[in-house]
Image 1 (cartoon, rainbow, N blue to C red):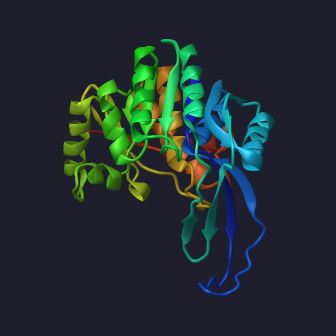
Image 2: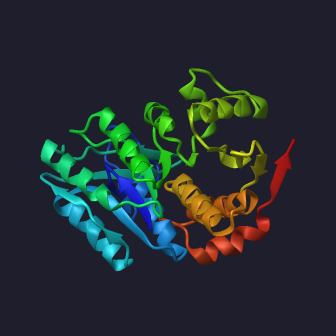
Length: 305
């Protein structure tokens, strides 16, 4: 079973506006509302490609109800801890550029956190757990690390995608893969990366700290994968009209793990991962299996020396 953990989920409002001006009345086009949060995005992608998944985390209020009802429509299992207050709403506003305005969810309490940890007791060595995003208000950063520790203690496969400090804190639990983008990888070490050689130097530093595989996304330049076998694979991105880049990285990570579990082939997994990221970029919400397969002929994986 694939489990996804979204400690701080959201409802994403996607809308557009022409001639946007600060300090004035602006009118948007019709908005679309989609469930969000990195782990939830991963669950949706996995579900789209036919993989069984269960979403865990915290939800609250009318927005929490919306998240559960949308997942029910997709036939995605979930087992959220329900808390007081309201789950956040994020706005993704497209004008001449893409602007994100992220809201704040209501805080969780000690009892909520304890209830969440109890839900991890079911994990086995057959499971894969995606630990994604940031902690919610009311949780300590140490709690994120404790989640990784419990996943590892249960023998489940751990996948981590979060901010620099939380990723670094969980490397000791040997995640199967971490997925920083090029900027985030440099940020982890307090530098600005310049080119492939420096990416590989610092990707290996993550391996030295415990990561098995490091997948570095580079936007329009594609992605670089440093495998546990010290292979370096490079992949391009598909061409198409970008609708929104929200969840593209989550889709890439989900597909990479799922395809590797199916094929045990890193090059094949990376190819499908790039197609999945592109499919989501060209869609409202998470990309479909059909679009992923349509984009595959554009994707080329190259092994670097």
